[in-house]
Amino acid sequence: MKPILSIYFYLLTFCVNAQLTQESDITLGGTDDDGSIIAIQTPDGGYLYGGSSASPAGGDKTEGAFGETDYWLIKLDADRNKEWDKIYGGIERDALWTIVHTGDGYLLGGLSQSGVSGNKTTPNFGGYDYWVVKIDLQGNMLWDKNYGGTGWDALYQIAIASDGNYLLGGYSSSGISGNKTLPVRGSIEPNDYWVIKIDGNGNKLWEKVYGGDETDYLRSLEVTSDGGFIVGGISRSNAGWEKSENSRGLSDYWVIKADNDGEVIWDKTYGGTKDDDLVAIKELPSGDFILFGWSRSDIGDEKSENSRGVRDYWLIKTDELGNKLWDKTYGGSENDKAGTGNCLIVDNDKGFLLGGSSNSDISNEKSENSRGGNDYWLVKTDSNGVLEWDMTIGGAGEDDLRNIIQEDCHYLLGGFSDSDISGDKSEDSKGGDDCWIVTLKDSCTLDSLIDTTSNMGMPIDTIVESSFFAPNAFTPNGDGRNDVFLIQGENIDEMELAIYNTFGEMVFYTENAQEGWDGKLSTQIFPPGVYVWHIIASSPNSVENTFQLKGNVTVIR
Image 1 (cartoon, helix red, strand yellow):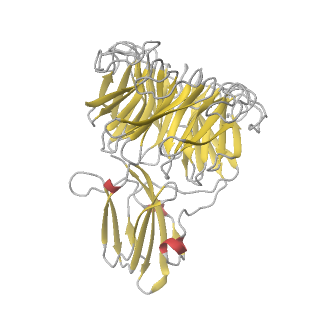
Image 2: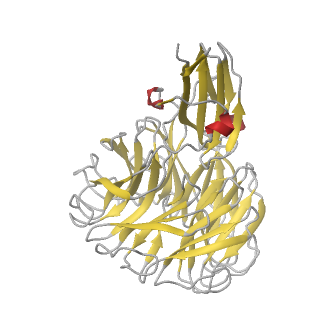
Image 3: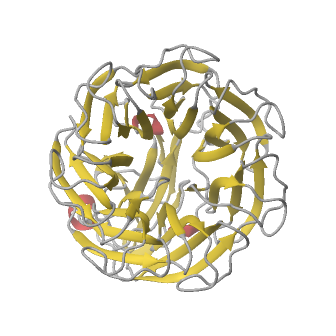
């Protein structure tokens, strides 16, 4: 009998990058300006695209605007067909920037200038505030919370903390006022990084302000493997307060590593003589960090290459203490700007995929002419930042890439477009800017991250496709928490389980699971993230019934 195995996971296939081809594109919007800042995959295999909308009901928008702009959320199924859309907002400007999956729903975050109105139930403190909205899996609003003072406070990123609570990262110009209890740092155009920790009901646990003597804008926040977090963004400040180094030029990358209580461990400044703006930072399996943004600077200080044009992509790799290991510049002769949603992907082969917008023609690192105004521009590098390929996707108008999703031999690109049918765009604009989603197909093959002969030690006769498993994240362990991998085997002689992170490094291994064995493995031993599982199992005395099974599971707290 063949081994019977069951595990709950999200399906993921690993691919080898080759030539990308455009498979499809869809345009979603109303009659005014709409677009996609952030996108995530959903537990049912679909997608959530989020941004802001100024449109009344019409086109793909089913609800009229509450105010100047609202949060706009679009749910697509696994085949990219629209299932539903929702708006959240009040009578003024509300702009969605970040989404996280909470297991039972989602947290939406951004900025809000609205008071109690529309479906917003919390008052405005002044200027913009952080606005967090909790929704269920169908998009129904459960609660909303405002955090801010009398100045301007803008939330850019929500992350799931190592203890299961949530970190909110953005910037603030407010002094002590509203529900902000810490003073602003600088006196010249003051603006600081502002990080808040909240529980699952939106109650504030603590807040931290990080800044220098001038303006500092947080753009990226990521929880790190040591249980703390790292934040990065833009700084125009010299040394002072939490900033330990002077400005290099007009603006610089500024990165802070903090522990799980928000206490600063180290900070680093990277820049040249002009503007350098960080938009994303990610931790690598080695503990090193990769920083992505754009630069106008020529050679000087941390910048080792001259500017290619008006603005270029700028990629920096650092060690675990923030010391620069190398930097690379990519661009054409005009304006090439890193995307500010989620446009930094650590690829399966340990290289990097970078995205943003470009209006450059063929020049320097750009291999294709502009389609019109700005286009989506992808840059793929190896693990040392060496350019492997680039790709331009766009229409005759303005196209601005803000988010990339990578899955099973596909890349989904999302952002803003006002282009009509032209170039790579197959549908006319619905009105003003729209959400434009482009699906690229990779001519890839199934590429195991695991060397089965050396790591697992068993022959492989059959690869069983893993798509028959139930698409749920976890199985309950009996105490109300969904935090256990459950592997059940019947009629099994041997079963080996390896779990890898998405960079191909083994984080768990067990062998010699015998007949009737039920394996429960707590996900509490792993930081939040996506993990690949790989099982080899055999029936008694039957080599031809040896199977290799693969899938992945997302750990959420």
